[in-house]
Image (tube, rainbow, N blue to C red):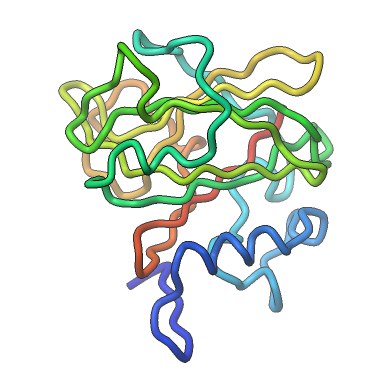
Amino acid sequence: MAGMREGAFGLFDRRTALATFLTASVLPLIGARTTGAQEAPGLSLTPACDGHPQPTITQTEGPYFKPDAPLKQNLAGDRPRGERMTLAGFVLDARCQPVTRALVQIWQADETGAYDNRGFTLRGHQYSDDRGRWWFSTIVPAAYPGRTRHIHVKVQRPGGRVLTTQLYFPNDPLNRRDGLFNPRLLMNISEAADGKFARYDFVV
């Protein structure tokens, strides 16, 4: 299956993919798809910094945003029956250099297509580290009437404007029916033994 990588113990897991991501520097990855560390699972560049960097495009906030989401990386524990997914990436500037302490906030539907509008299930924020990296443990959201699978995101560099956008899943048959879908916002997703590993780099 495309995107899978096998080793001595079979298909890699999300922990291995995340560990590989965290040990890689962003700079050697920019504009490169060669051998070595760049071939490790989950390290494919998203289009934003592959060649000619462009700011990540904006999309509507939608009706389900709530302010004051908690500082929280592990959202998967909110919905233990959902399919696990690790979502990771860099926050980069217009030269594709890492942005430190950028706010990254996500919110999404659960495995039934429902949002928690009373509490903060599947809602959280964090800050990019000193190398511009961020990551969440979450689940794969379900589609719901009128929308394909997606994850809402807000990104703000220190002192900068807030980027509001949405991320999408490749090869989802509902993408072409969703009026908001944009292929520039597709995540790179690898299948892991215990779920999915998704990557997207924001340029702000």
